[in-house]
Image 1 (cartoon, helix red, strand yellow):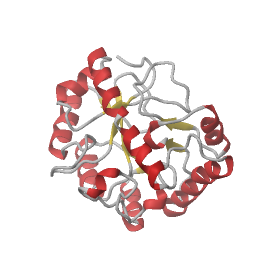
Image 2 (cartoon, rainbow, N blue to C red):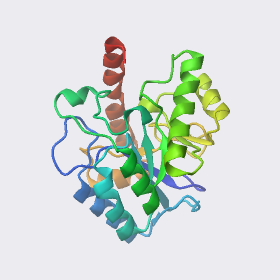
Image 3 (cartoon, rainbow, N blue to C red):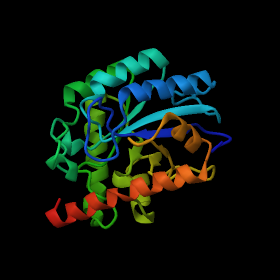
Image 4 (tube, one colour):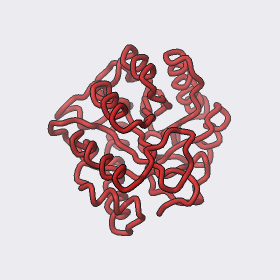
Length: 249
């Protein structure tokens, strides 16, 4: 098992029943089966207060609009409280930051959907403001990315926002220091987790569209081959980073 103390954190992105370009979409029917399997194997689908080696926390990066249709029924069925990380500059807009939008554009959550999900018990965290890679941004721009996203989510939810997911999972010491200064107490990456991850560089178990349920469970148990597969899939996000630099985003 990955950790003796804290929960295993799963990282999802899109959860759509239809085809989506790229590797980040996980069919909602398969997600339901995955969560059922974990519950059958006596994993606890954790709320934020649960801290044990057999607890699982569910997170979603990018804050896509279809989560408003998928997440409430999963919460009702399995009794967990997920975290949705939102790039606040894209609220209510299509995902033009992602190169896949030229094939199939996907909208992000609207302000109304965010407030409705929050009332259902969904927690929200920052995914930056513009979904730009934070490494390499000038100091002022970096701080604004972290500050404005946190403040907008706090305005929408009425709750303090202390959780961050680094866009594309990328961070360095300067980014972590800025996150700490801006009031974040925990920040998630896309690297595989370990028991010694610091609070501002927490790893997660990534779930991709090609993953079978057994593959996800093996990854949770720290199977080396599954770790390599996930790392290779995550490396593909570097293509989006490069294209966005060329496009000036």
